[in-house]
Length: 125
Image 1 (cartoon, rainbow, N blue to C red):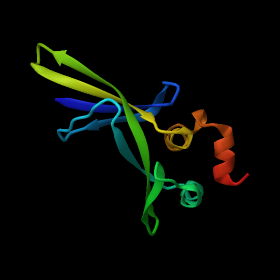
Image 2 (image 1 turned 90 degrees about the vertical axis):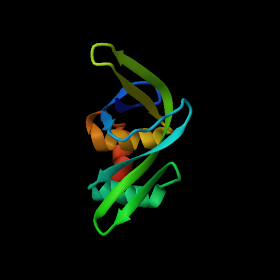
Image 3 (image 1 turned 120 degrees about the vertical axis):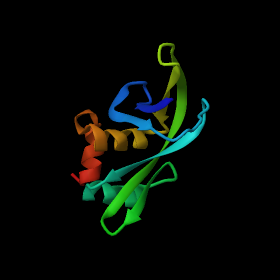
Image 4 (image 1 turned 30 degrees about the vertical axis):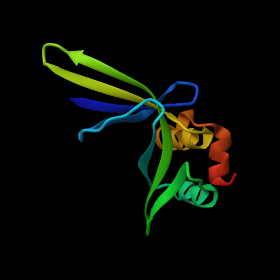
């Protein structure tokens, strides 16, 4: 069994690079809240989240080794039954819980698609 988590924006667009394969057995339900942790090296983003973080988007770690923990909501679960292999693949579609989480995901993974206003706020421009 393969489990893939795919993150989307609030409007339903796929966030490029926000696709993770999970090797441990786990189960999800529609509407369930999950936390996604991504490593971050950008000192501007670390500073921004340390000042503005909430329980939906917070900083974790210390001494130069930081990650951002973001709340996402399970929006859809799809199963693919593979008859020839006698297996099942599952895709869990999760949606950012708010615009800040969405912006942080895009800032880290696909900066070219990130809201320029968020980029300015993070960089202090």
